[in-house]
Image 1 (tube, rainbow, N blue to C red):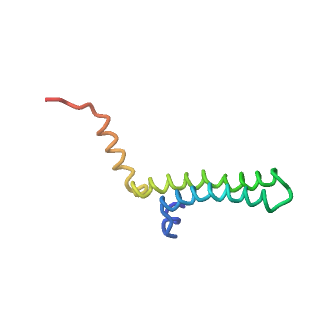
Image 2: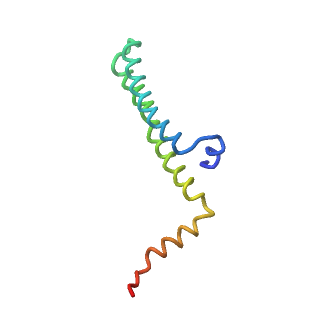
Image 3: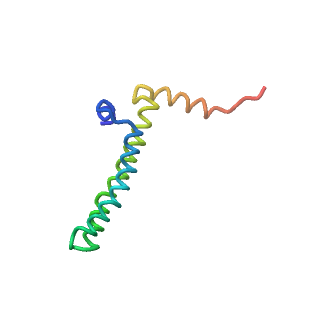
Length: 94
């Protein structure tokens, strides 16, 4: 899925921007609903919460895509394991 999003032109920075944008959109939909609808605060709160729930998804996708961009997927998994093994070895001071 991450590779497909990358092919579609999305990057981790775009996902982070969408996360912050959804926070702003959440506040905007809450304010607009509060003024435009007669349902009152309850309806406005529901709209704000509904849109606000998108932010964690975008941030999680951004973090996953950042890892994909840095490590390049499964092909580099072995390289990462080797580096971790090197870090675990005790340092020998001569």
